[in-house]
Image (cartoon, rainbow, N blue to C red):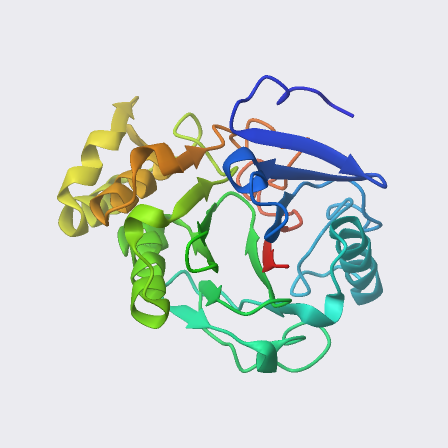
Length: 278
């Protein structure tokens, strides 16, 4: 197994039965309470250009390959596929609270969870699943109230501060205190590679004025640091700085390890963020 992330104090790169996963050290402290991971592209059965651990059913991948990939990840995490709840993402900022009644939606039965880029729950054995290929995964866990949430934050979701919306959903639905919430901001495209034009810069400037300090201009193009914007949004919502970790991993720079929409020119598989209360 590749050891490039071994020196990180914030993430752990594991291989379980050949399935390579990223986990976050602040969440691993609660491994008896929650199970979580961010998948890589290694350990599945999908063929190029989805080689090999593609987690999305909406690609031109063979469905049986994706189903086998889920079986392998579920076995590695010791969770049941039947307990998974899959998001249906539209680059917005809506968060859906899910319960036992939602188990299996999007994977073994039809789902009515349409247009939600984040999921939250306080129920045991309800595994939240969200999807990525450069966008930012935001894992949230309140160990006091035992509540979890995952949010998919692309640039549009970041402009709409979906991470903040996830915290607010945890507050409103489950009475969580922001100071108690742990956050892990996972592998995504980094500022080194996230090149955007003036129109995206103007969106950030108009909606989150302070966000432009996390942007630099090189050769006429803007480069945004989405994870840093998200972290600052969480701090503004009341999370403690010590409770937030950033993976520091760029998916495009490490496209041999992660699916990257930009790195693979749009022809690629999809990664998954998974989180469950045991």
